Length: 191
Image (cartoon, rainbow, N blue to C red; front, side, top):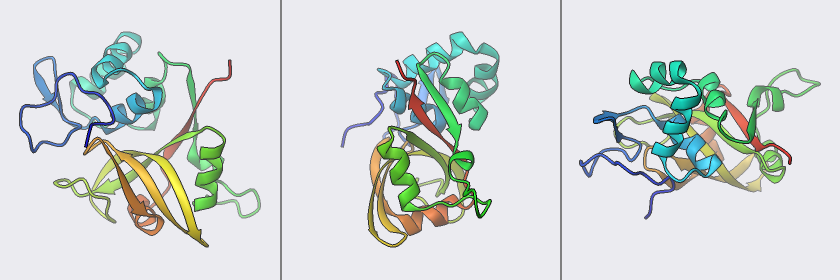
């Protein structure tokens, strides 16, 4: 299966996660957020997105990429600066006005996708296989599609940067992996 995000300099080790790349002669880890943004803005490679982000925000870039740190929500939003996209927090979009709490449902995901939003959400994964699970390391993924089956049940398609491929999970598995809602909805700015 082909990579979703093109990579100019993958690591030479065949069993490394796809999101590990060679950058300035060193292996970089923790690039799941950068892979998600590259995928959404349809940049020609992860390295091209990194070059553009480094030019626009050298201080933030140095703190995250140069020091091999994971990106937070503010960093994801900052990565959008070279592109014609804007982001909104999922907590803002999914807070029910009556209940005054975030409701995470297949219908709310589907509504955003139908309105041309792309969703990056924080999940937990197994550090060795990259599979979503209820505990593990923090990780960003892109929700690509959702097919509701019954009430609050669905099949969810994600882009998982760990493998740099599309994967399918039950909505129940996504909920267990997400825990609290942590993420953004991204939309191309209107022309």
